Image 1 (tube, helix red, strand yellow):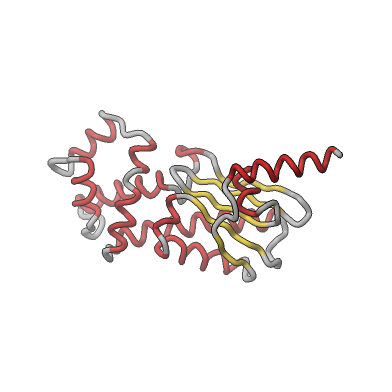
Image 2: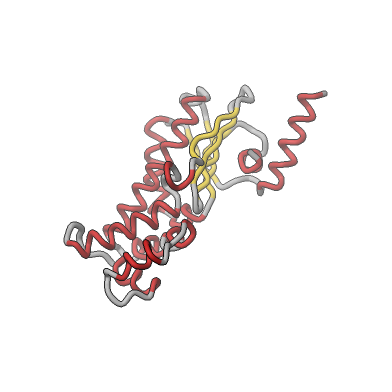
Length: 205
């Protein structure tokens, strides 16, 4: 909530946050609030750094199996995780038990590979962008904002991948919200706490 109010300055709008996890929230012109996502890595977190990292590890193994085209992610992941051979990834994941943060830490390698033209990395990031777009679309529909001028704010490390995520994200959102515009948050979450407190004081007075 404080991220939402910080992003919008207390005005109507939507925010999509994609870091290690993912969640989104929206505020309508009528003061209604909606949250989408934020269900954790086991049953949610679509489009998050965790999911991007997990998909990169899957692509790594699929490429090794011959079920995926060759990818720059193979060399990058082996170097990052100090693997001697591809099969060592199983030891790292299941025996040494890579946690959510460990897997999310693979995500920057995907952005790096995408910048270098890797098709697999580009696909993973584009899919993440479309998943995050579904958050914004679901919120807008729930809040009745499909035909309004709606500001969509994006924040979190995943969006630092730039156009690899943002372009499919914006294209997908525009299909349902043709009047949407996109921006970075107006303020930090700390200011959002101030806006939210002022709103609550106003409602009580």
